[in-house]
Length: 589
Image 1: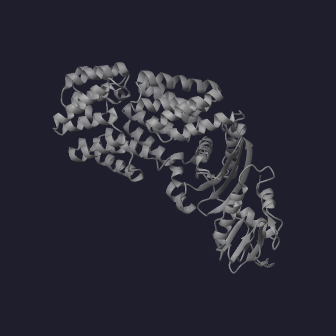
Image 2: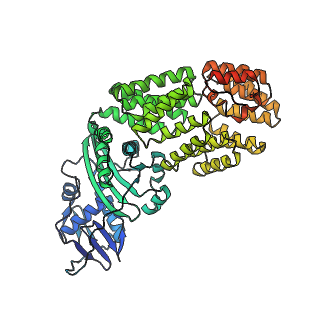
Image 3: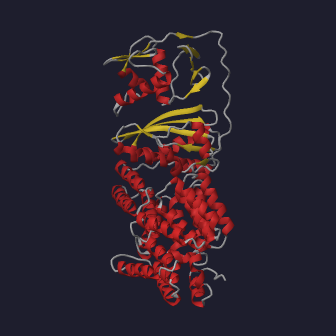
């Protein structure tokens, strides 16, 4: 539903300092543009169109939302009226502008003037836009249990827009930092380094979904475009492409034929499957082991409803990959499941970027097929240039292959798309750590912790950098925080055990080593973790035996053997160099 501008003069004045420019769709006070969202602006225009007359709530619903209403209209009308009053500095008890007629509706009561001689400057064409951020869509249901749906639709719109090569689209992680934010649009745009902002709302009820979206030039706070869409949930995939195409037209980017084809998705999806998929992604994005396991359950239930849902298969691949990274599942269990899910996703939809990136991770961390991994990451980026995970994961691959400068440059490129990502910021620090630039790495870890003080990975890798500088007390303090945040995972305990040994606290280190060996009888503990403590204790023969077991387990950490500083004491040993070659890397000095 397009914006309906009432048949009124193009310029109106009311109150002492308010001006309404209907053609420019702007409300100003003393010449300063006031921010008013699309729905409240529509309602204000409607009330002014019926100046002095009672406008019933039923008339408002039909005019603003249409007859086929399927949500709690009272709350939506009240919210819009409150926003109008807020911007007009109106008092509902003693109104100057909008009068409430209890139980009936509203009336616009302020005198309106339409100066015939008023000079309204012509609209100035907006500047070229090549970067956008989609702010979290507002959940209009006023039910927090529906937050997952609004968040999921926000992520879906970001993902769809990111397929347009000519646009730089800020990734979900950074955009979500502005949920409930009170900052102005120009301030948000400066922080994210974008030229335009997309904001709006989503309403989900039964098998219907309504999305309101508007595009603003963040540099001028100028309203550029707004639209409202209502669809059956079965058509939600094609709706995402439709919105993305309209935004592309408004910001005047040229879509390639391939991009047009990928945005013109017409596949219908089972509404129940889509709802379960959004719940799965909601948990996946929390990235803890517990939430990833919940995500697997939701993805599997979605596939029971709709076995042909390619994105749900791709989601399963992501889950098994991350559980392998957390050492929550043995690699020989997790990665084959991830690969089967990714290949199924590509069989159903060969133009999905996500499963290509997932296969890239599998080839990098499990199969040690280095050239194959690079091809898969590149294919993912070709299909979706803004898919930040593909850039992030490929950067790590480049570093593992010894292409340090290329890897750091690629990781920085990922940060331009997701500047507030604590994960990518931490991983940039990790790359600098592997490059032996410990001071710079420490600064990046501290920047990550400024974003999220309880991010366990940043504490852990900060500790590793301190350890390499001989700052053992600081390192042990960070590792104990990490172990607490990771709830005693073998991954964190092994690094703590290694650092205790390096600090000369051998008894405590051996105690942790015994704890890990005992733990391995109950759950998977990577042989690499045990080898790491033996390295710290300078028990190199035992360390190499455990690394050999890690090779049989296909531990992902063996791909880092050429660059991990903690393994430096083993580098001159021919047995170590042979292990490096078995992983498919050239053994360095």
